[in-house]
Length: 317
Image 1 (cartoon, rainbow, N blue to C red):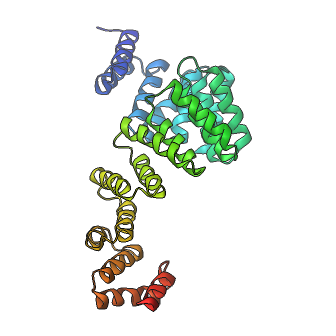
Image 2: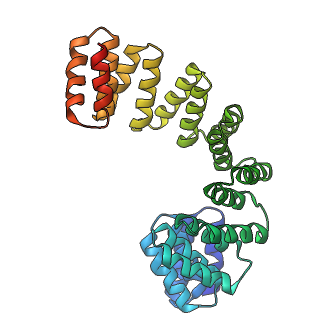
């Protein structure tokens, strides 16, 4: 018969290998022997959070800090779960307790920075993120990405760019860091450098929908319409229900005079004023003026977000 310590160690090894089902079973075995084991309880809570079971994770981690209130890691894990559950004030409380127990807990500091950023407490967020970057033992790249987000929110775009450039230098396989760098460069209208960073992001993670969408917009801003359309179609191949991107493609095809293609994309999107406006423009371009007019008249008289544009097009028919 195995002991609690043996089951917990076995669970941790399986956890590290990515065998979550095996790890969960091992932690459960440890807790069946001793329901009051703080380490197994904390590890199980962390695993449940990884699986997206935030409610059960929170229960387990609140039990873990009750069993061992001196565990900085358990408080940090609880803070992460509370933050992911949208409970910002409770997350801050847990994370501050974690940091008080271990001022060098870089994960708790970085999470605290993210929670404070979401709450708009930017000065405190920057301090927490800088402490996290200084404390981390290993790859600082992901921590620099969070710091860059805070710096960007504070309007210090040059410093944010510097942090992201350092992040991708240290962690060149981090697709999200490249995406954030591309986003910042796009915001600064450095379109060539934005395209370069965003191509890196989608090369590392072809399923990164936000990066591919922004890459298409950057290409479009550079006048590379064919390349932009290609990226939008690649995005839709992976995310066929993304109507905003589909309608971006319809608008691009309208601008290129490809009215059949624009109509085909609009017909695949869910009904909305934007969808109907795109359909009307495509129909008008195809010489189906009466069909277009009916849609434009309805939009113009409906008072919706496309009413003024529909009325303007209607006047020009």
